[in-house]
Length: 535
Ligand code: FAD
Ligand code: DLZ
Ligand code: SF4
Picture (tube, rainbow, N blue to C red):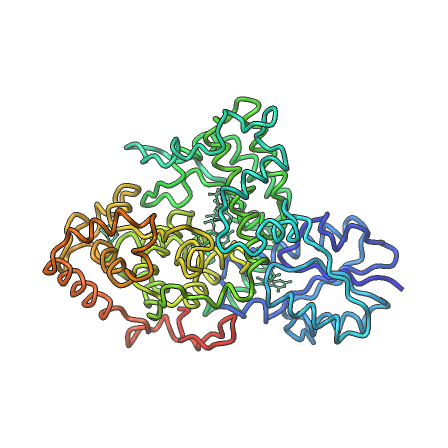
């Protein structure tokens, strides 16, 4: 009798704990394409294509190595469409007397795995995910029952523990953080580095056709699909980033430019989150570039902080605080998600650009996610669950462990300050400073009031007015509330009236006659029904 080793679609690493002791003579590796995972939210078409292609390539690599792989394709006869159904069928097919899995990236899948322990006739071992640098238990111990958890404290601990960018027990360069050297505006005429595109091979082309046929109603375009879908390609994408982009990564990390969706960002998150790369090897590659003098410290530290710091931190927080975390709504936000998040059709050029790029690439960089789509949702008081569903749908790198804390905690402050000491709320001035979007917008970023004024301007003050009870006592909000206090009643009334007019005009349903929206409702991951919204 052997072991059935069930590898999920985002666990595609040869050293994943499920496979560490795999016996090629007796064990079977199970990998399954299932409808339930592709539709529990209506993922962007590129996300499904990326994952199915990466799964098929990974299975082929394991087979080439001599492992026995049972790969179930979406269209295979008898495919039950769910993890549980396929696991049961596989147990009936193979002489296996136990199941081994690695803990998943989402709470709902962990609940499934726990049910398998109860319901299946064989024992089920759930192993820790060894592709992260901070084990869940270690984070939980650090977090304890503290109400607020600051990333910077966690990050410094991780630097000390791993020795990354440490010199004689001190941070390299004498500082933990080089943020003040980053966040520059792009110089005029700046040309972002060229990015490699991984042309679809026969496996990917077959998957693209499958996705187009079976998920036609899902959000997003497939044209131009160029994600790395094998470990080898992911390593080559990483090498390209380190050589060509890391040397300016920090400087322009927060900049946004029309027609330049990637700038010097690494684009490695889909590969990293699916297991094609590990956090450790990515951080070591960046550190090596610093040690060899190929990239400056501000860029290397800025990059390593994203992975060793933010990425590990959000994952730890997710597991330490779920499921209660997702249920909080500190600012009682309840407005429906505007329809333009799906269609991209809005006069607000910043949102139209970021949503358009998201539709085209299943990608937007951090500041676009936080300070454009996230900031608008915060200021407009959109219901957290609806915003979270949107982010989980639209990005190729989205899994709940990483999407939820970033949206719920960082962008929407729905956790009331567990993650961030104050909301990331900003007016149009911030977007104007960090992008070229305002120059071609039909709204006027310098106007404060009236129908042609940039909506971010009055929504920002309206947000402060509406949430004064909750936010005014926050010492970090002292300055904006002092500025608000200097406004007279007439000005405040004007802000509220402008905001009301604008918010009342938002469509949360497809406009009549919009043929691209003829889709049914989608079930949200927390079991509610959301209105039809994936064009
Ligand atoms: P780079 O800018 O090159 O950064 C390098 C790596 O650092 C990323 O690949 C990523 O692995 C990591 N990283 C950076 N910031 C974060 C962060 N805040 N949390 C976790 N990892 C981080 N990231 C996801 O992987 N999946 C998501 O679903 C996701 N949703 C987000 C939602 C919001 C509202 C915000 C503000 C951020 C979200 N992020 C998410 C984090 C970040 O935006 C993406 O990781 C990043 O844009 C991916 O592009 P990149 O690989 O080019 O990143
Ligand atoms: C996202 C996704 C999709 C679209 N399809 C599959 C699939 O068919 N089979 C699979 O094993 N995994 C898939 N995934 C990834 C899972 O949803 C992911 O493993 C869980 O969300 C836990 O992180
Ligand atoms: Fe966005 Fe306002 Fe600038 Fe238009 S003017 S692009 S709405 S910030």
